[in-house]
Length: 374
Image 1: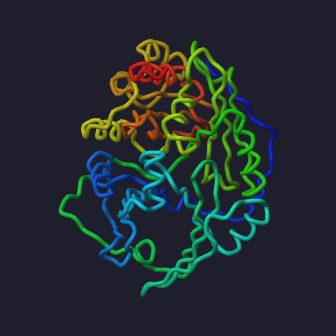
Image 2: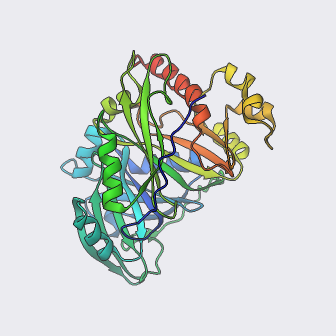
């Protein structure tokens, strides 16, 4: 069983209040088709649109929602565009992990004063529903954090977006909110970004895992989980560790073309129903070795969910001092072996499934081997 290190308790001193994840923006090669995939497969609703028809000439963006989750899928209209260059290098991927803040100007100034690099100075956007103030700072790779102030806006999402309706309205699958977002960085860079989030944003190191904790016979990695003070933002940061073969982090860095967001964990209140629905719609998940379930009951004790159903669906279970959690990981959702999703249900547990690491990474390695990348 994997173990974890709890860093010495640290009082969080957030540089500025963060109310939660405002949205996640993806830069993709074809936003119209990507939006259809997320709607049909993951049950998101098409809520708003911004593009040439609304006065924005260089890009098209589709707002998809489910529960408190807001995904924005954006594509370039012409090839001579930073979005097109981003997609050429990275493939479809996360560009922006946006924070909802009370005052974007104050937040931006505080972050810059503490050493953040600017991606966008505070900008006011207006329409008939009021104004939104936005700024942005950089983080690992080509990823940014937008700072979004909404206190004087009563519109649907952002100025320039228009309400849109479609006769195709698939049922939601029960996804509630973003639980955490995981970033992959180069060897030797994990502590740099841990220090960055601590110094610039006032985050604290919630958990740490080293290469003894997260390893198989062939590969290993190291990870530290950074969290803001109220716990609404949690960013595990991974880096590769030396191993006999190419780790999942090395594979990601190679095919993504550098550091970026590896996976997004989305929470549900009923993982059995959610995963059953996702599988029926064609979402593919990693499969843990059969031996994992032979030992599961002895390791985690009694759970509310039928063990035979958990085994059939391929859901992983882990327990900590405060309860247990259930989780499952999709295969990459594009042809490059980069971005994937985690579905998680927390029943008291606040950890990240340390007892599942070995089974998870063996499943990932099996997929890597099929791709010829192990």
